[in-house]
Image (cartoon, rainbow, N blue to C red; front, side, top):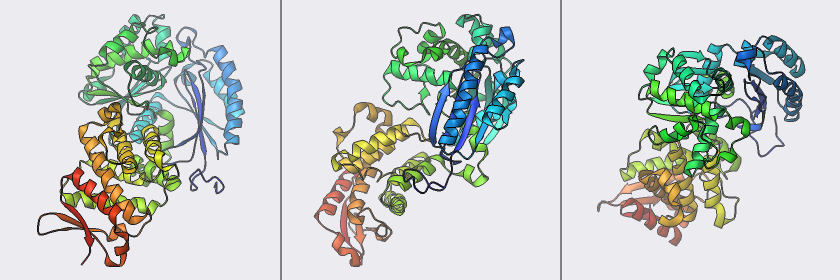
Length: 504
């Protein structure tokens, strides 16, 4: 327990996961085992253990020496962070290299714990669980591109289907192709013919997992001026990104806008990642490419959850946690979610399932900016929500929630938000955000941001067809000019005749 750490949740203890990959080695200390994992500390090194493994059959000697020193630091960092324990997983390079077993023994001695060297099947399973963890009702093919291998696996809801491991990791492909992206494409095309499961992905989503593809997405964001620099759930439109992928696959990257923001070690593997992605698109014919920030590590963490925890909605879980940490009252936030749902029903306005989830999350996070200066609460909340490490939500949904809270604080004005963010949300979500923001602006003035009053507020249909928001007579003193003015704004946004009155 961490009762003295008021900025952290009190019902969990830190847990460390070290992922020994073919290209990178990473330590992630999570706040605890939870449905929506929160990173307490994150450190990595690009060791390149799998460099030249195709030609030598061994782990890279320089990479091994550097990694050994770093593992001592990783253990010290984990202990410093107060971690309950260290869980270590190793992937393609460690399981395939001639000297992999000796390397693992040395690392186990340093870390003081057993290392789980994943088989290709296990690696594919954890990758799939990472996608299931990170997306609400995932449906498609998950592809985890590491330094030594590519894992492909079918995911649908919480079900894991067929999977396959292919020798198409970035470092391995660079080695096999003799440094030629063109040859790499031919190798990828040949190997992918063995992946029969790709045929079942036509018209579905391809979930791109792994550092090379994340950096490819980051470069695409920078090159296109994308307004929201959040990696998880970033989408590549198949047609619009074709020219970009072709250029990167040719190795023509030096003059692409933003290339200087990509590390040199990652930069060298981008053409191979782009080449593999192009061949996957040709073989699978997906509806779109969606980037996952979650992979093997998070999949492993997800496997530690019980059945009830796995079934929880990751977005709502994260929103609840943020409300616990930052809102004046979590109970008020939950009441707001209930009241706004009842209000939409009274207004005769329907919701798609995704819109309902986003509304509930917005209500849970509606009060996270209350400690800021009044003039900056809206902007601060928008920035927090826009860039928080939420999962189970796409970028338009993230924009909807952020805009809702912006409107809740700043007022329902058309010019409050940048054209880029409005464009990302789309016209339907912008109007829904204005409506929800207007509702919140009414009810916060009646509830003083404290629980107890909202369940007593009722919408009553009048004989003239309008609606009256009724307040119990014992709470009549809560009524006044400001709530009336806010209600008139809600009436304008909703297009309904609304009044404030006392309950009979």
